[in-house]
Length: 205
Image (cartoon, rainbow, N blue to C red):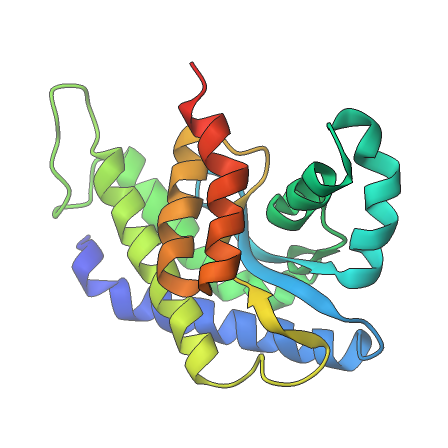
């Protein structure tokens, strides 16, 4: 298996999955106001779906979680930038993401069987960095294609929407990927919030 030969297929399937998911949001959440919509993975790059946060949920959740933070602003920043605290998860609509997840399952199977020919085998073992780069580049491309398609240019999405990649219970490595993708897809205002939220945790010894 060559990852290079699967790049366009990965991008096509993930883009189509998100388009279906976004159509469901527009149909079923027309009275809401989304401040965030991100591609969401449960662990590593396993099980692709989406995550979103509505303004209503954000305001309600601040009251619930502010006891764990220094002040309301810190609580707000945390909820805005960590998908585990959001109220919408598109992976629940399995059919929308079935095709992309079947492809990803096949990629991981080939990876663990050492059958991906264009990944380098390192002294430490399999080239996980190369696999991460494949997914990172693909996800970044898809988000920018979604922006170009104008699918976020109408309600229930806010004019300045947090985009990117989020992970369930992210490790520091996963947070670094979130930051790197954010720089390429988000407005300066949203990327600044991602930096303020993530960098102190990533830098913590």
